[in-house]
Amino acid sequence: MTSSLNLIFMGSPDFSVPSLKALLDAGHRVVCVYSQPVRPAGRGLKERPCPVHAYALEKGLQVRTPVSINDKRNQEDFMALGADACVVAAYGLILPKSVLDAPQLGCLNIHASLLPRWRGAAPIQRAIIAGDEKSGVTIMQVDEGLDTGDMLLIEETPITKDTTALDLHDRLSKMGANMIVRVLAGAVSPKAQPKYGVTYAAKLGRNEGRLDWSMPAAELERRVRALNPWPGAWFEYAGVRLKVLAADVNKQSGEAGTVLNDQFSIACGEGSLGVTLVQKQGKGAMMAEDFLRGFDLPSGTRLA
Image (cartoon, rainbow, N blue to C red; front, side, top):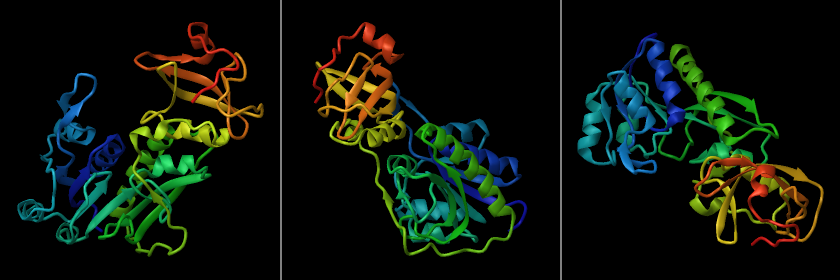
């Protein structure tokens, strides 16, 4: 691959911005940026561009935000750009074969997992929930399957007992930016993904964060780390939703869902979850001990 290429960049969230920046810093010409359409966001539901769209405008780049890229006109417009390659990073739309085949070097995807583990939409969160000891980034050639293309470069990073989804997101975002520049700069040999070890990272659901006290405390603690900031790990008491932002695993046990003491320890199917940081709906985050001074949650309380 040459030192300077005409690229199309396709991405939408914060994860993708460092990669776009790295490509520009490396001297590549980004002829067009594709991102998700402008949608209402925030408390006021004001329409605002996604992070990639906003950054591209700041850099004076052409931006396109089609709702779909499956219609003939959008595909023709894509092909007319005459790009050497297309870089995809959490774009959010499935690309048809005519788009995949248009650039001379094809479409390259920055995927936040060690493929073939965690193909799909939420690899960062699923890796933490599953208790994986490592994650990473795979640069792959996009094909018509779901993250099934040949791998061009793969690098890993550890997941520790303290790793949150936000921590891992930021780390993998930086790794991916560095890796895509290296792939475009040097000779790489495509390698087929192994046929074994395939798992799928289903998209996160809004209600997935509800804590099920019948589950082991260790698994709930991983969910707390994996689901922050969205959709958050939460439970309800007396009609109030409480989001658990940080917690510890304790050995103390009891009937699942029972508040065990005045230290905010809640019995689980195995062990107990010691809540350390909590947020009442519509309020700011508070340390558990400060929160309990103003919220009545006595020992022996049963939570649903």
